[in-house]
Length: 120
Image 1 (cartoon, rainbow, N blue to C red):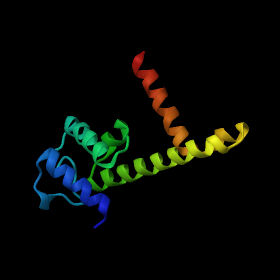
Image 2: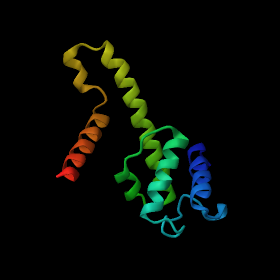
Image 3: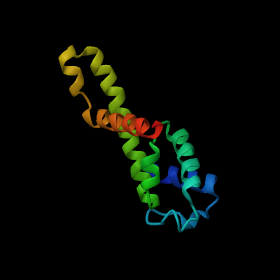
């Protein structure tokens, strides 16, 4: 059992109150009684537990506990990429800065695009 899964499981049990033996990677969120409001509350708890930012669209698209673990892992990887890109951008020549860590940049552009759509 991975460390990430055990921490996600612990968070689900603490926040949602699910029985610990029901929470496994194949368990569906609906089967655990987690609705869309619960998933957002769970997302905030996971952000605090792992010290990452998790986009709501990724949380809401998660169907199983395994999906949540993958979402947390991806968010951790993006944060690592972001931190590394910040350090590298300070050292890189100006013309090379835009190519650093492009998956994270695309994700941020999508986030700003979605925010612009919501505000209209």
